[in-house]
Length: 231
Image 1 (tube, rainbow, N blue to C red):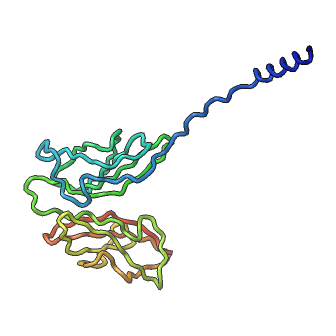
Image 2 (cartoon, rainbow, N blue to C red; image 1 turned 180 degrees about the horizontal axis):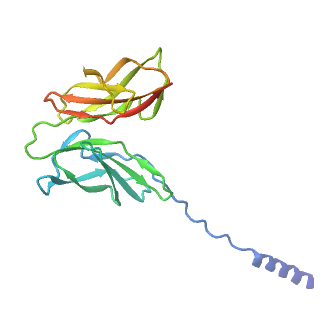
């Protein structure tokens, strides 16, 4: 009888010494999926803004929600000056006060609890103003070779390419500037395609280049100057 009592006591003592494991804290989840921009539309003339002065209007930017996003970072670039601004929004929309008669580029990043992001594409639009009958082209982008790229040529020749866009859809031609200084000289003008083939490049040299876009009304825009190297 004493033996049975002792075994029972040991079993109870063993059970009382076991500690219950704490419930694990939920693992933070970063944004998943793709951010799709919706408004203003890509390469559009924005006429839906609310005019607040002769030079300013409020434009609502909208995009799709992203699962597990804690907030959104909206980047807006004035394409006429190259100046960029960043804003934070807790919702999948943002009311921006913008200059009228001005081209803009914008993109959105969704931030998560771990600091990682999901990124949208970059879209462009022209914020309309009174009395505007013709809009300048958007500055060319997606220049290849790209920023700080190291290029391997074939027989010392390469192809330069870019993307042109215009709210009026009336691009006429392009001028390409290329050289080894930060203010590259004109290489070829009035190019009809968005590429230039068989460009002579010298190995072990750093180049700078840009594209000027011209429309049928004589309006022009300049891309950023891009630096690349040849090996």
